[in-house]
Amino acid sequence: LAKTTQPISMDSYEGQEVNITCSHNNIATNDYITWYQQFPSQGPRFIIQGYKTKVTNEVASLFIPADRKSSTLSLPRVSLSDTAVYYCLGFEGGGFKTIFGAGTRLFVKA
Amino acid sequence: NAGVTQTPKFQVLKTGQSMTLQCAQDMNHNSMYWYRQDPGMGLRLIYYSASEGTTDKGEVPNGYNVSRLNKREFSLRLESAAPSQTSVYFCASSGGGGRGNSPLHFGNGTRLTVT
Image 1 (cartoon, rainbow over the protein chains, first blue to last red):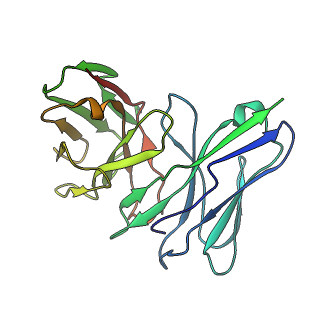
Image 2 (image 1 turned 90 degrees about the horizontal axis):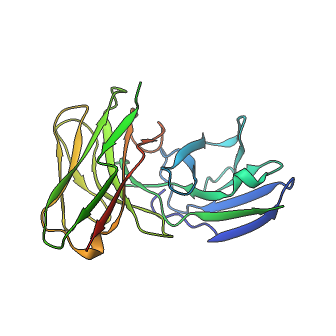
């Protein structure tokens, strides 16, 4: 993925669906698209990962177009507890150099 | 299982002092990482170890050294601390082959202040 680009911040209201898009123009053939969530004063935690098309788990969905140059993290019906920073990861070199970037700060309002 | 354990949790140093941050994982993971996070900022990779016996520089390696002591332990050393190194330091491990195919597991962080 090398360098990734995501919005710096987003606001939403409780109950809405939130979509955060990440651009990764230099994605390598073997790269997985991986998203993490971080709450204040905690380490990041893994949310979802995909290689192509769509992946869904109990927390989120991940949409990946055919060219894989971007991905969209979708959080259904957000609550106040979803207020956090969301990171789309990049990889350099042999793939172990894992880059977090600045992330997207999501603020959910009541 | 404890997962990833970092010690100490908090530390205050004076400029010029040295210290070692310890990290141990009990998940039999091959890869380990050190990140720093300044207030209001994202995580920046300091050093990583893809496998036991190897270490490589990340985005911000200056002022730091690392040792992959064995498969479980990966330490980060500040030889001469500077105020610019005031940050929260996170250690992480992963069992996969890189490129995001296996999630990173993080410790709870070490909060370091250099005065």
